[in-house]
Every structure is written in structure tokens, then in C-alpha cells.
Length: 266
Image (cartoon, rainbow, N blue to C red; front, side, top):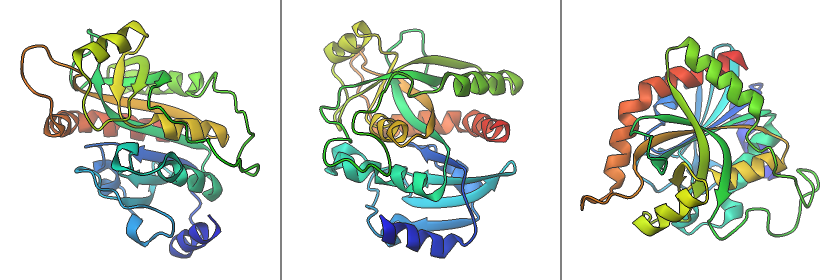
């Protein structure tokens, strides 16, 4: 960790980020528009390379709406063969760099039948169905306690702030529970039905490990899902990653508008 922080600080100088953002599939354009300093994951000690289409794999530092922000332009996933500890390491780095609020974003399949592709959903809770927890292993007391409470990971006041920003900018948002599977295969109709019975509104393959570690580290978390598709179709058509990217591209303008408004209000 120490050599990671030293390397990043050697590149950013006196820049002290207060807000962190992890940008999901198809949502990385925000980091292209706001970019003062960009560092490839390949160059950062202990970071792993992002391999998923739509994830550039850069740590981007920028001032947005008067706030200092660090963005992960692409994340790493459990299904890529990385450990839970590896994929959540950047969250711990953000904590050490001074981040207080973390905005987690993703593209997710709609489980709630009232959701349409392109909807934005504020995450109010999650279900970890990935079969693993990133806090397994030796505990680092400098970051958090051994048995952290997970009652209020996604802070209600941040969701209320996001709702106000959405209303002020004319953007409609939904609210719901995010269900995390390991992937990389999409869910079967029976699995989607199970998720719906368990109370899920959207399903995806990320975010939950980072949310767990962020909460453990004392970061305040806001989660936003871009609903990219019906999670499992019954009309015989196949789901694809290209469909996910297309849907997020169609929603990216309102997504960027909302996130900038939230940053300005934090």
C-alpha cells in the first residue's frame, strides 16, 4: 500500500481528492471530459489491469464543480479471476488519499419489471450472492474493525441529495436493491425470478465488494445503477455486453449531468 500511495502522490503533487467515483461499463466518458491528471493502472504499483471492453483502466484526477475528485475509469471484476482483495484495493487507496465520499456506478440488468433500459437507480441496499467477501483474511486495523456493521452502507442522506439533484435537473431516478452475482455469465430466468423473490430490483456483477470495503473503511457511499437491459429475456433473444454498452451510451448524458450535480452539492 505504501509504495502505491507514494507513486500516486508523486504524480498528483498537492492534489487531495475528497470525492471518489468508480465508473462502470459504458460510463467512463465522465473521466474523458474531466481529466487533469490520468495514470494508467498498468503503471501503478499493486494495481491490476482492466480487461473488460468499455473500461479504459485509468485513475483520473480532476476538479469538477469546484471539488477535487478521483475517478476509476473502469474497474476490475471478480469474474476476471482476480481476488476480492485485489479488486477492492483501489478503494483502500482512495481512503488513504483522503476521499470521504465514494460514488459507485454500474450497468445493471433490470429485475424490477417496472424498470426500463436507460433508467437510473439509486442503490438503497444490496444482496451479496457472489460467494465471497472482500474482508476475508487478516484485518488491517488502520482501515477498519474486524466485524463492521453493514446496516447502512448506502447513506440515506446521500440518496436524498441525489434525488434533489435529479429533480432539479429534470432527471427521473428509481430506487432499489442491487443483487450481485459473480458472473461472467448472465443470469438464467430462474435465477432472476429468485432475485426478484428475494427483493432485488437490479442485478449485476460488481459494486458490492467495493461497497463493503468502502463502508468498512468509513467512506460514505452512494450507489447508482444504469439499467441496461431486462436481466433475463423470455422472448428468445440473447443478452450481450454490446447491448449493455449501447444502453449506457444512450443514458450517459443524463448520468453525467446527475453526477456533476451531485458533486457540486456535496
